[in-house]
Length: 112
Image 1 (tube, rainbow, N blue to C red):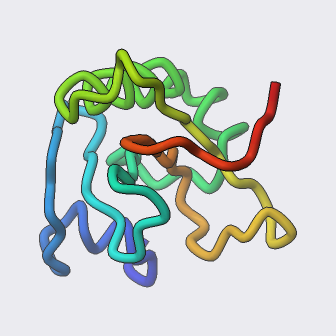
Image 2 (image 1 turned 180 degrees about the horizontal axis):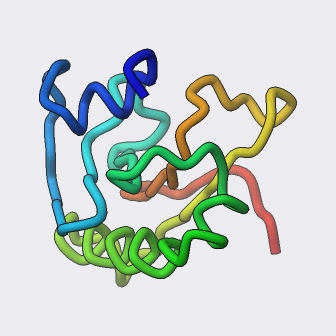
């Protein structure tokens, strides 16, 4: 999509600090990090949300890339979070499926 921020990053039209890439995914540092490690993992194909990602058969690719990023960033042992935000109430602002990989410090919100 020509008006999608993440599609423009995939196409090389906007610079990003890429930390991991596969044939189907791209992982880059968030420009407004909420943790010492905050990386976004996206499918290269434009898919609007996590449901579309799963239906396209790319959820596994994104999750494997997220795990690779965590290993590369050295946060596997201390722990990390993988988050998909869906809809405006979740704080989502870019409507291209993406996972946030967060870690590198104690994360304050306990989810279980």
